Length: 73
Image (cartoon, rainbow, N blue to C red; front, side, top):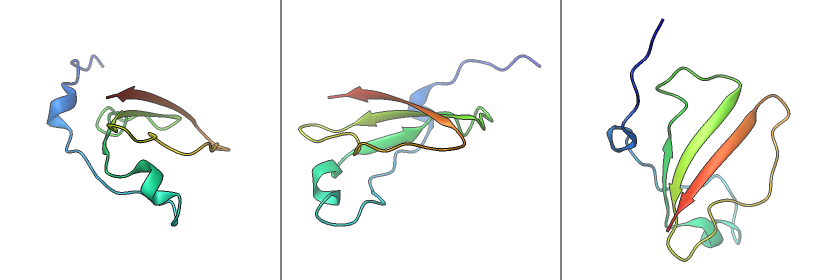
């Protein structure tokens, strides 16, 4: 199956964080677009994050998948 390229602007951004305070305030406000989901990726997460003056995420790891974050300011 051949899938077309994905326009990141068609993926709705989310502006939330699962981090508890005080870590949440280090990451939000931010816009995060999960690009891997609409492409059906299951073993790697691809996120386009815009976090002007903020950290895109806290240091963390996943045991069952990899993650790629492209951060834009």
